[in-house]
Length: 466
Ligand code: SAH
Ligand code: SF4
Ligand code: F3S
Image 1 (cartoon, protein in one colour):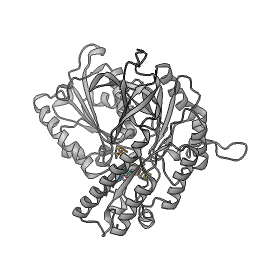
Image 2 (cartoon, rainbow, N blue to C red; image 1 turned 180 degrees about the vertical axis):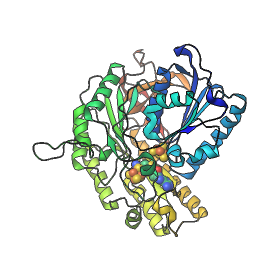
Image 3 (cartoon, rainbow, N blue to C red; image 1 turned 90 degrees about the vertical axis):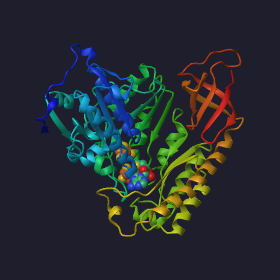
Image 4 (cartoon, rainbow, N blue to C red; image 1 turned 90 degrees about the horizontal axis):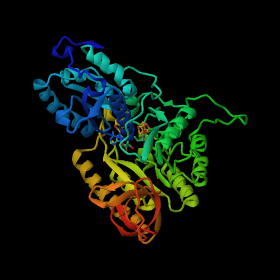
């Protein structure tokens, strides 16, 4: 903790606990950060803060940051610049940087942006109240030390009232040579099956219908928990967890992300096919279509193994949708190797692929290698890849034409209030009229059948059957 001698040593807080002022949270990055933000918003609400109408009026501004690529990191500095200026005229503004940039940069963020009140790594998200108390006592606080993550004590303020994220494992023990995540998210920490189930039961009581279990490498779930069954098999795996939580009453759909091809097991695929609430969508990043590149990435699988996993999924769940992440222009990637990434995209037929050009990250081995690919080549390869991804996604989408899909209605379509929006089990965004052909008025939370009559590259429209 750093003591602040400066002007914000006495914060003007409202007199009533229910009116302490307003907060604003901007979230960058992945679902993990989104889940952390929802928990931090829950803590602020419990402390008596309310959500601000606008960022520039808020009393507390919190940026939950991402550093997966350089452009993600740079974004936060431009946001911070504006708030630092505002602080000159509004000294009571509390400025917080949370998440992965906070963990990566730590104290050096204070040197760069001295107006900051609090810098907190992702493992400290559940400690926001304690940290803010230290700030209120006049300190500039940096919280980045390795931390046993507290079991959630506060109810998250969720963005949706139907679908919820549920963290099951924090951190990552892999060492992919391009990736900053292990250094900013720390070692794997699994929550106990009991704690996870109890969170899901509470969500069901509040009317949530869908949950997505989250982990950077969700297949690693349970590795750090004790538990060997009488047959000598390890019993705290992701597959066991799915069976354990499956029957929570009120929850209609279960998803999980992100899967790692190295650990994705046949037993898991069978469980997904067998458990009715498990949705047929799998996000399994492959990163590159070339075995040599995969080796230099330290991914621990071959592209042949990856294909076998997809084949197994499709044998048991023929309509499953598959999405992935891919990186182009990893150090040393030749044109021939890049073409193999294009080939795997056509061969597999992905519903969606998140693509990126390789970006060197602090404290990662690949960033120090000499054979970096020039910027112009990165741009060209990414463009070529994106064109192909869109073409294949469109083609994959055509299989929904005239099909009847089960949709969970999640909310009103903000662009047309007579419509609802939801998703297929395979995770395709779908719009449909609130009023069915028999004048039944659907509402969010309903599970219904929709016949698809319009296909766009990344969404569908249809008419309810009833
Ligand atoms: N845990 C997940 C991915 C987490 S990061 C997994 O193992 O697949 C999300 C995605 O960002 C990665 O899948 C990768 O495609 C991309 N990514 C990570 N580091 C990157 C880097 N240095 N440059 C470009 N893309 C990167
Ligand atoms: Fe990064 Fe690899 Fe861990 Fe995924 S598995 S978060 S890519 S180190
Ligand atoms: Fe970004 Fe951190 Fe997620 S670096 S992708 S927010 S784990």
